[in-house]
Length: 311
Image 1 (cartoon, rainbow, N blue to C red):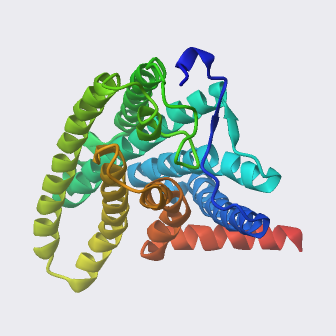
Image 2: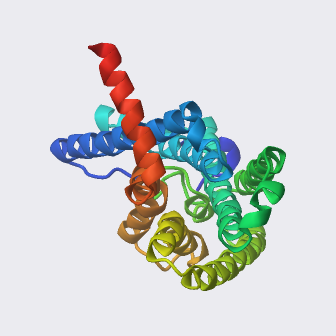
């Protein structure tokens, strides 16, 4: 038995006991991390350098790439270091930082995806008012609101979670510090306050989800009324990637945070955590660039300029 005041470190879940499998985990996560770093870095650079991409949609996409880089760095780097050095420990302060950053970046991404749904709604359903409703000042305000809301939400949850008395040791069944896993260590019934906060947060998140769904109902109605096949294809090419990213984040995030604390297995928790914290930052750049011709052209121009400069 222990309490939170005596805990100086937590023990993270090891992916494997054998040294060869630990090194395999390190190299696998390193490959995923480098792919995320390259993909998101290219998008950030392309949007920043190409004036053709200085539009609201790509401004929000740049913010999304920044969030993805922060998210995967928060969870993966420590896990890679633990596997490489064959350790499991993370300091109390390091765990607190992970709890805050994971909650902050996941909520910021969800808020930003909600804003991006509004951007697509205005662009397709009210194109004549696009420049008025989504000017540069409005875009900055909406992005700031997404980041600010996530910061306050994360601060509230981190403070609440880490103030709980912990009576069940310091071993977490996860490869990073996650709120549901820390709640499992709390004393009986003491976690109900944080569960209440999670319910409130997910009620607000459900409101955002309803907004996204209603926006896309209107978007698809408008797209189906477009007479030309090329026009419909262009409209869908900007919506499908966003909808794919939203579906992945919402489905895995809901399962991770809304399931009963003691019903799922550690292996299932691990899989879900990888799906919502590691996979999206790595695949989002691919999802957004596959069907977006403007972004592909900007990336091609960027790569060509770098290659020619080196020759």
